[in-house]
Image (tube, rainbow, N blue to C red; front, side):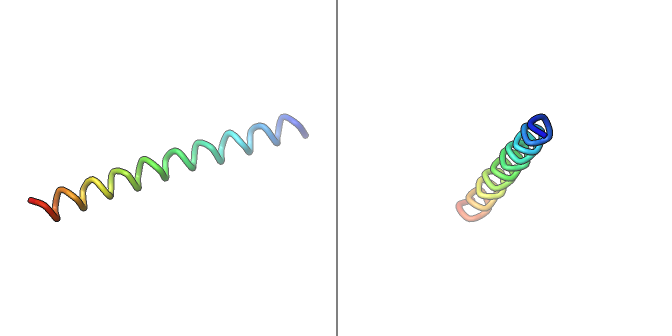
Length: 36
């Protein structure tokens, strides 16, 4: 149970980091388009 909980937390953290990178990439793209 504890192992499953740790795996779930790890997966959630990975998903959050991917989402953060995606949002930062999208923001950077938007800024480039907006100011070019």
